[in-house]
Amino acid sequence: MNKQNTAIVSCAILFTLGLAGQPAYSAAASANVNKNVPESMHLHSRTEMPGYTGDFDHFAVDVKGNRLFLAAEDHGTLEVFNLASGKHLKTIKGVETPHGILYLADKNRLVVTDSGAGLSKVFDASTYKVIDTIKLIPGADSMGYDASEKSMYIVAGGKNGNLPDSLLSKIDPRTGKHLGDIKFDTDKVEAMAIEQKGKNLYINVTGKNSVAVVDKKTFSVVDTWPVNEGKMNAAMAFDEASNRLFVVTRKPYKLVVLDTKTGAQVASFNAPERTNEAMFDKANRRVYLAGDDFISVFQQKDADHYQELPHISTAKGAKTAILVPELNRLYAAVSPGEGNTGAAVLRFDVAPAR
Image 1 (tube, one colour):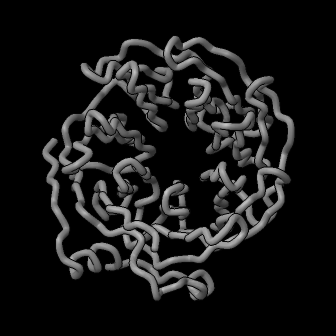
Image 2 (tube, rainbow, N blue to C red):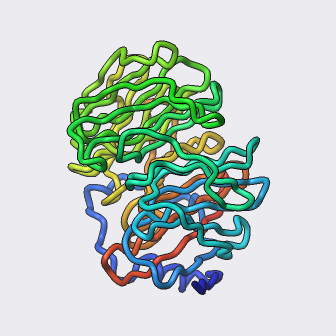
């Protein structure tokens, strides 16, 4: 599989790639955008991935090893790239429908959730060989990692597993030991956020249009908050220092800001179509939303006030992304879907807030 890494060096090319053939964003969504500020990031390079169809899912990074990992969900592979140059390094087989990826630097392992019949996998990240499996109910998808406790959480079952209910399973990723389950009576549970200094985990119970608050110690649901601004809450990001949870709904596409002390909504904004990734930039106090055609950027003024900044042009299908704060970079995957937009990985260099 030959893949070409092409640096984008001119503003004209960037404009063409970002905007050609794309629908205009609604006036209501962009009315409050502050256009009198420098762009929050700029496109550094674009790695083309010819021959790919369908969707990509999530990323992981190995900063020390200079590697970027991408789950090619509909291609049944993991793709490995040079983190600096964007060059494609390897295609890893052995998965069916990969979704989430966790890189464990201390073990040099990759843990991959797989909603196919072959269970979730653990790979040796040197040989890229499968060395273990994680035995859960079918349909493993969303994943979260608690660095403070070195625990991993996986959503399984539900729609992906052809089951009416979903489970949130707690796993020791280094041993594969299954530490417990929480059952949700819906077939759709999505992204989560985990406190590192506190005791809670927050998870989108998408089929119920709510956020569940989970006590990590007792591993039980201790509260449930309705998401009233929209339905189908999926993507999530978290600012633990300010106790603010950023939730993205799909009907309609909205960014909803919740106070994690009370569950109350404090702000809301329009979000890009098909947003599938929300990221909080702690250093620059920004929220990034990756969706069709562009990345939305919101500057946090304080916990309750945000200013929408100019959109960052991407491409249709660029709906999953990862922020690498150690390097001030953001990577986005352009999923071609069933269209002909062309699969690609985009690297953006993040500019400091002023």
